[in-house]
Length: 303
Image 1 (cartoon, helix red, strand yellow):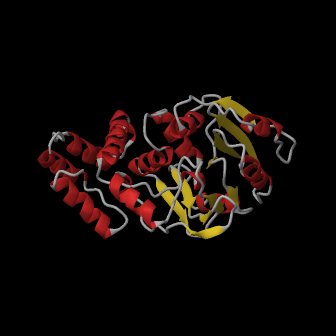
Image 2 (image 1 turned 90 degrees about the vertical axis):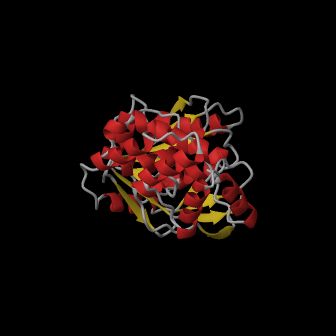
Image 3 (image 1 turned 45 degrees about the vertical axis):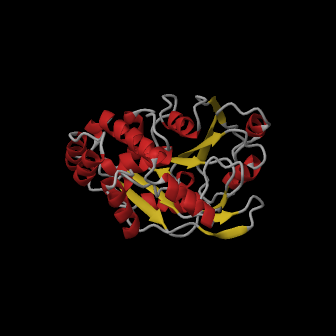
């Protein structure tokens, strides 16, 4: 059985952490070890983590997070020089994994050339705080650099990556990006790697007030995402990702490097320049209507 490291990011997670840890011990893929990055919890999170033991009786390795939020915490774990590159699974603190979660992801990764960065991800079963089902997360069908440039469809709590992808992320270092999972999607596809998607939900994904992130399907949540998309907040995320890609352009394929360079040649301080830059980059979103809104909003100076 292939060994794997679970990287778990925690912050004030005492309410639900034990259930997540218990779901690790129930995994059918048994060869794993746990590393926890705690980002300064003041509740019982660290006590619960320190008391945990895996099937072999081993405690987790607990390291202090950088104190700059969840993205920096996970990227710090991924780039930790004390950890050798290998198969890695990312975990939030408040989900509950189905027993075959790791087994299914590892089977997907086995389909990929081990020399090429590959990232397995998938759907989740959304629940309320008490794990009452709300329905499955959205299903996504196409994964590519052109999509990753303007949309994150890779749920970080489902990510399992091969050693080549782990080495790639370590080569890039802990970038100042808004979302670690979005950065994983961007860099792996930008470097010519593969995204392997499981349409079968692999975990219970709690939706509650303490979530740093969540996938709320309510009308209000949809409206909030629509407001963010194309606004200053989204533009800030986009520019941060572009800056991280520019800093790591040597890791991209020749074609994707050329797209990035064509984009960067344009002055993006006005709507006309942003429109020309966007056309050079040629991004797209999962839904045609959203792609049209992206281009239309840029032409009108809204994004």
